[in-house]
Length: 592
Image 1 (cartoon, rainbow, N blue to C red):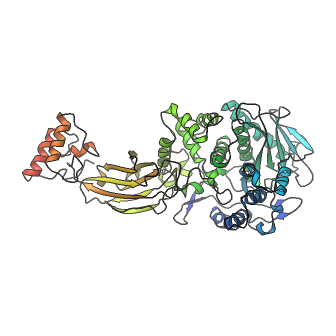
Image 2 (image 1 turned 45 degrees about the horizontal axis):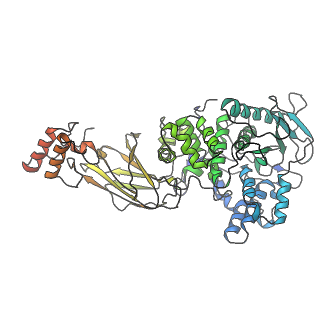
Image 3 (image 1 turned 120 degrees about the vertical axis):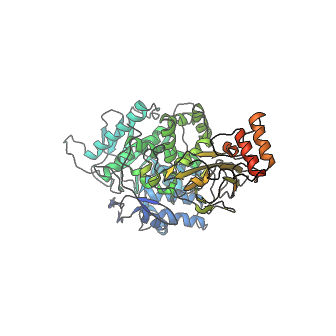
């Protein structure tokens, strides 16, 4: 499988609150049929999904919880019902707005995480939900890795088509093939541990009506390792009639079947290392989406999640606060995509290997250390990668970045220098802002940047300069422990625009504000005092002959005559300017 295979999926952008939304058509959602109820499911575009989610069962449940009308235990139980057994929801939470959910796994795990908050009736119902469903037939996959359990009658009936006349419905044959492909890729190709075995040598997949989900993975008994591994089994929707539009050339439902096999079996593979839910759900789901895309690259189902990431760069990367109202967890596949393209795909497995014994973020640090970096340094670079998408695509960054939506810009600064700049949506922990500024080419000098972020968090600060629509090398400015940075753009007037990227590189706090100013220092202001005088002459002489520090903010601030180097001729030029009415430093501006 070629991770760097580049897609050419059609992309368009819609604007809402300044967002850029990616859409590839309309959701093709057909009728979901089960023994108890028939839903008439409407067709929604991606933009419409964002609107109708507010009236879905999940949103109604969330609103009731926020109002204090239901408990936390009620909330997690009803959310699981909403996606797996919607016909069993209390009437007040049933809705005509029906949105498919890719995986029921996070909802199941949320119930397990909050088991003690459920009342006895809810616990009894959940226990029944978690029991393996009955099935009358089974099929062993070609690689003898999976036992597919299915029915040809009743509410869980699979499509009867059997074009190869082998006595097994083609739908079941496909599941076996796609599951085998995923298994070979993870274990033979990438070296992942297999899921802990139960009573036989097969991993069990049950094909049944799974409500509004493509599929789910259920945790069962603990494995026999010294770490927190678990046995599990999978369920897959019996018709995929709820499949959303994707790019699979065969059909949307076949594409949905492919990515569900890869996604859910990766959850089973994760459980060979650690059962990580709750605050780690962003990584659990994000890596599952990442792997489904690697195994079945042609499907591109993951594209539907991208707006939930690129429209909200100011949101916690690790936000897992609301399952139903957001697809943020799924959208974080962008982070393991960055890691894999930057450091190789094995780094994702290495992180899971460390997670057997350590928490998620320290595990990322451990996996990144051999690459000479750590989580926070990589996070700062990640924020830069996220700018080069869509029309701003650059081949140095995401291979498929041309098909990603543009990241949301927090605000624009219409002229440099500027003062008193503050964010519109201040970044949370592990999040960023993007600010586009436009230089005033009349000014002659260096743009000194004075960024002052809230000192209760750690900050990173990068900027990208653009000329003729080409992003030049990215610069990272050092930020001190109080959140302040002072750096400069020596030749800022040469550029068409500058993108500033302040990012919070610590985990906690939301809406971390900052104050951002800039000023122009004249060329020759070698000590960065804000004016040229005798002290700059002394500063340059000390630098040249006495081992003194470099000119402040930029080496070329000592290049008074702009000949490309700092030497005794610059001292002479500055003396002539200050005391003999000579020409100003760099009268024609810095070299182009």
